[in-house]
Length: 367
Ligand code: NAD
Image 1 (cartoon, rainbow, N blue to C red):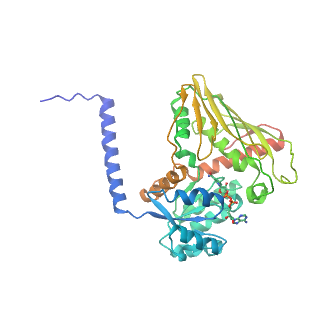
Image 2: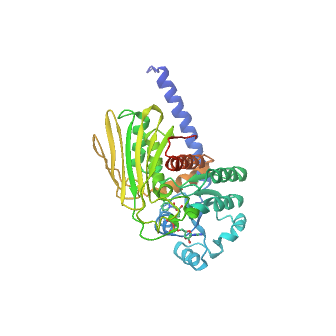
């Protein structure tokens, strides 16, 4: 008879594989019992819903577009036709409490301007629906707390629209940070901006919570924390750019540069602006670097090189993966890998960056 020689490490690894196998088998079994795709209702039918989330929901495996919440009935009717859901699943912002009685809808995805996220996410939770909330999670830390508390109280799950956690290039950045393949990523820099030609809600403090830092800079804040292996900075310094269009940017910044200092000595120098087009990020360690040369934080067209050569992953539909992952979290009663707490962390960092720019001082970050 063949003798089996198993050392302690391989025994533990085999044991955990078989336990993992059992859990997986049980979960697959659960999924088999629930073949119904979960129903998502998009709340706010602007650019991101129309151009990204709606089309992505045609590619999802575990969820589908089952309804909408919109200020325009006509728009809702057009979406019902385009996506094949019944007109009874069209709601307005004022009739959201009625979602409670609609079993077609399991998840509400909040895609309105930032200043409305808290009101809309809380209304969805109160109607007993799981919530995905777009970035930035809210415009104040208190609003983030209120969303988290409302979801907790209603026993519904909450996640933030951080789609890049489902992108292979950004997963590689996370891997490099975790495994220290290039050493500790001590030096990071990035720039994200687009030219805003006329006043829009993104330049209205009440609806946006701030200027490009809230809308675009948040990607750099989040990316730098990824490069720091998921850790928040200890301190930040910041400086506003001089305004060239005070007519548009009357109550928000037009641009801002800031530095994040991480535990272990990593430093990220970043900037964001509504006055130039850029989408770039680089992280370097003692043994190598990764450079997101183009479309660093966008849905398509990423050009990424490393000190070992270019990366050539097949770009997935980030939003489809993100929504499918959340649907599985709901089905399997798991916490999202991009939970409300992560959204709140970024708002805490952003508030510290604004404080640093206002005061001219280094601000400690209290996450
Ligand atoms: P948008 O201006 O195109 O759409 C906003 C929608 O909200 C519109 O349908 C509008 O009618 C509705 N709305 C309801 N109340 C409103 C009010 N008082 N003022 C203005 N609009 C109101 O914006 P968008 O680009 O779709 O952005 C919506 C949210 O999605 C924002 O929080 C944004 O940060 C986020 N977003 C995320 C990504 C991403 O890649 N994750 C990309 C784009 C936008």
